[in-house]
Image (cartoon, rainbow, N blue to C red; front, side, top):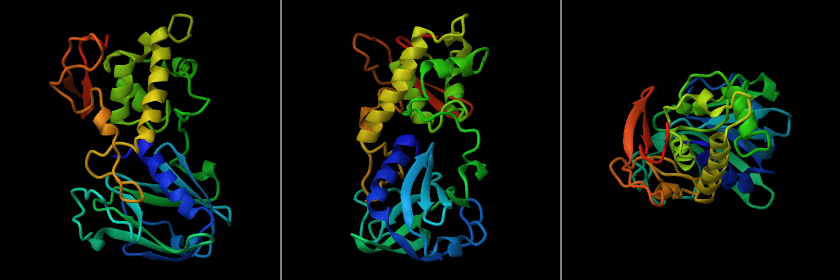
Length: 294
């Protein structure tokens, strides 16, 4: 599933072509994705100008001139592309000819600089969904989300306040979207490795008795920001199905230190460990048993 860097990569790819564009026509090729489209979805979008393309956690937010926001979650295999852009490295669901049966939403737009455009949302497995709301606080998907990990509100002190007294393992604590928004399995594993923290360590162990963050929690906050920044610069990670809006794949998977590297040597300088894999809450966790301390 696309995580924060992948969704941010899509946002950056879409923004120059969508901001300022007017939605002339919307065609829905089915009644639903994971959930049914909102009532009146087509009518609410047609004639609107997209004033901004934003992101909150793993959600794309298209701000409309009439004041409403169109929200999109990509699920496992959702992808936006413009007609004329071909997938440069087809995923397992897309052969070079592109199967249009998975194109569920087609939008005709007019942009003041780029002219007429056709935006297509495709989703073979249909785990993605779309919503429409007037205010962010009206959205059940945005309600209760924690701070953005690349924003000023995210820091070790904030995490310490949320982790104090919590026995949940660190991986589960970081995957809790109420603690920090947008993190997923891949980047949690990578951030924990950079901070040399075991994924099974109880979250409360990283908080001092005074309630202040430990040095390890400071390292983790830095690790989260660094790994996400590097992943965005690399265009995200492509394991199976993620593609940017121009059809390009991401490259951060070539920099993974632990994720999906079971049995390989730990890349930490001077470390003699071998990457291991365990399962936590049904998800694979990759770590080094030598340099990542409990």
